Image (tube, rainbow, N blue to C red; front, top):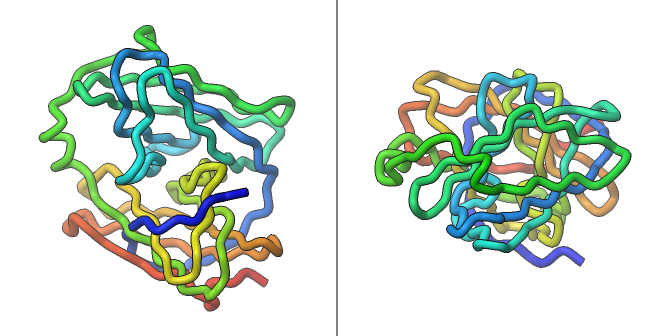
Length: 219
């Protein structure tokens, strides 16, 4: 059973709305480092942009801990990139990781994945906050967000045990690309009805928000 969620997120709407019905697999991230991970970004391998930080503003992947999410992709096998950042600013990157329908995915983050170090204060200046508010009047069981240049929705960033209650919101962080970048968002309720829309992230605003409503229902 997914637990209730009351988080925060931001976005700007664009006029293009679309729906996608895909297979949902699960993906587990295991932190095999000595530090807690505070940022965990993903990107479909066919995109030139990073997607959201799936840990959000209230979760940490503790050292030797794990967290599981649902993941959405259109083909039997698709590839994703991942970037994790720990409390000391160590950066871990994993590229072209194949996710297949044949089994649940598992990503182990360890010292062999370390690629760089970053100043966390400088990193925060490069991030944009995004709040998505559920105004559908329905409980949403899944909420996906991915760059629009990809065919994949990617990770359900509420994790495998979380739902988004009516009136509640979820919060994510995205990299500021210093240009307007389009993202696709899709929510799904208990009846498998989907609510989809596209948005353009404004690089001039540090914090943005958007409502997902019945007007976004896919027919």
